[in-house]
Image (cartoon, rainbow, N blue to C red; front, side):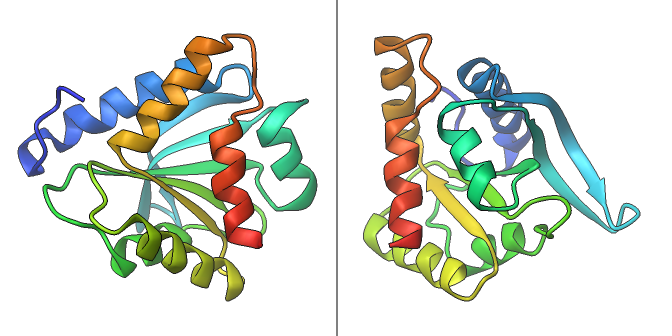
Length: 165
C-alpha cells in the first residue's frame, strides 16, 4: 500500500505483490517466477506460481479448470485498468500452462464493470481473471490474519464463483 502509483514504482509494486502473495498463499502456491518468459521470450508474465495445492481454494480450482500455473499481472497505474489489461493476462493462458490469473491494480472506480469484463472473458472461454485492487487485497490479508492456517480464501472463491455463475 505504501508504493506510490505510477510507472516509477512499477518494479517496487511487483516486488511487493510477489512478497505478499508468496507469504499469503504458501503452501498452495509455490516457486514464484518473476518476469517469466513464454513463447521463447516474446512475451512475459509478471509473476507465475506453481499450483501445488492439495486442499483449499486453489486445489478446488485445479480440479475443475486448467491451473497448473497461476498467473499474476501487476498494474501500478494511477488510473483505471480495463479490457487491454484483461486481454493481456488472458493472452498468456494456455491449456498446458493454465487459464487462471490474478490481475492486481491500485484502485477500481467501477468494480462491478470490471467483474463483468472478467465474466465476459470467462464466458468466451479465454480463461479466468480475478481483479484485485488495494481494497480487495486488504480483505485477503485480513482473512489470512483472522485464520492463519486456512487456505480456503473465501473472498477469492466468491470472486471466482462470480466468473462462472
